[in-house]
Length: 246
Image (cartoon, rainbow, N blue to C red; front, side, top):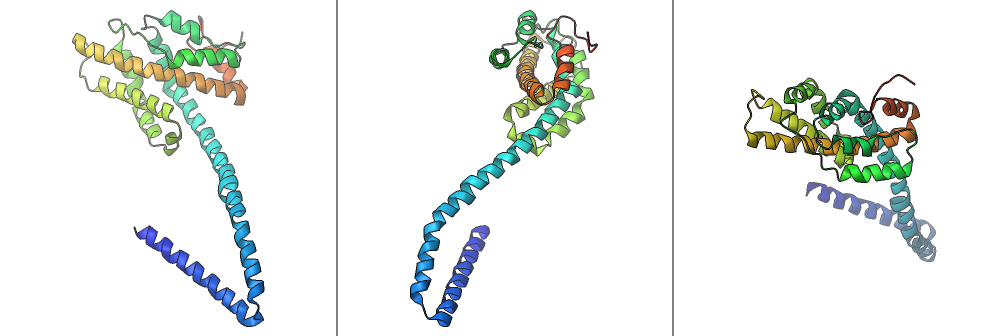
């Protein structure tokens, strides 16, 4: 309410100044005809000026600002995968019953083009990961997450994440799984109902993990080929990942 009042006062002040200047012009030149000619001309140009300033220029500046934010966000996404995402991709894949199918559809290689990425993205966004929770080493996953807990909380404080809802969902899914595992003093002899709940949390995290990973490496292919080359050699969906250039 206070801001609205200030806006009204400012508008009234500007109108008053304009009227005063027109009155001074009239006192000096005594020519109302000249005043109204230019006043109507100014009003006629006003819609075009609003269009140029508010719509065209503002959109260009907004687009450039958004591109800058997304660029910084891609850096944050890359850091996430370097710090914890890649370890989770590889560390949990082996516990999925449909791991062979997942690996086959996400095995990115140097021959992939836009068509292959589009097909893989469609698969990833509709992925139904099927974790074998009985065989899953929950202590191993808990260790990976607990070591990076402070880092994950730091990422969640990044205001730029508001520009990327899917990555925010990935962070929430990751931190939620961490909280679920940390809340249990022991991960041995867990009831079946509890295991089923943890399985859902793992699958939710992995669904977000692979879809964001695909978007990120497609960005690397275009913007940073040298980083993309490393991903091609080390990602867990191939038979023998190795950083060594063959």
